[in-house]
Length: 258
Image (cartoon, rainbow, N blue to C red; front, side):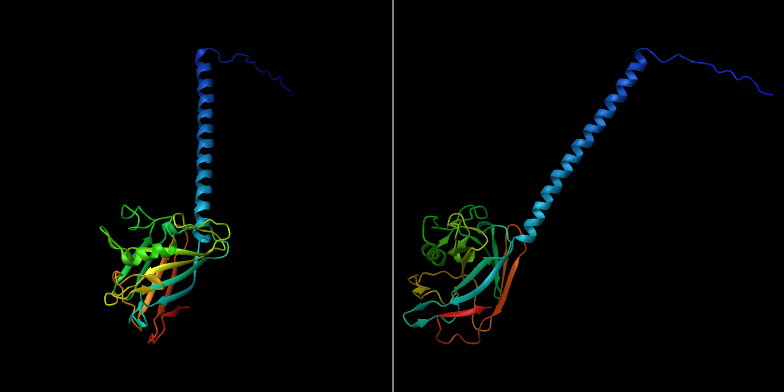
């Protein structure tokens, strides 16, 4: 037996201002949610790009120490018993990003005392650049001020600063006032290691000091273990460690590293 089914048609719909308000509210909520998602994704993208750039700098910005020479102060043919100056030849590793030596920190220790050195033109740490430093001076003149001058504060220049001389700079990006190293550049970093008993000699590495060189608070006598750590603004630190020879003999300049 087949029964006839009947269907009820309901053509009524919700109308009125209340329904319209609910509809508009749903549209607004969806728009706000979409706006938040778009803004959040944009912020995350910017943060990811910034983090990636910083991570790349940390990996690729690497100084490399090529060699270290020690120089003894002298008067005529009479030489100091200890080292008075370190000449650290530094380049950049393959693929390295540019490095600003004005932001470089060099930490050197003789096993007893430690000096934290900044570039002579850095005026942020102590409120001014190194006493008598000038970006228009030659590297030799600034080296003379590093070895012989004192400012208050912080004190003897050699205890707090280092200076630099360029060796190779094909793109002419490096200057005394703006020491930026690019790939292929090679420089010599001068670090004062004048001992308190060797302050009366007249010349150091061809620079006339007239017996006015200042104590660096370091003593690099024979058989001294020396550690140098270079910390750039971005990138990995570079370390060089060596032991001075058992005797300096009659040599004015001695290869210390490698």
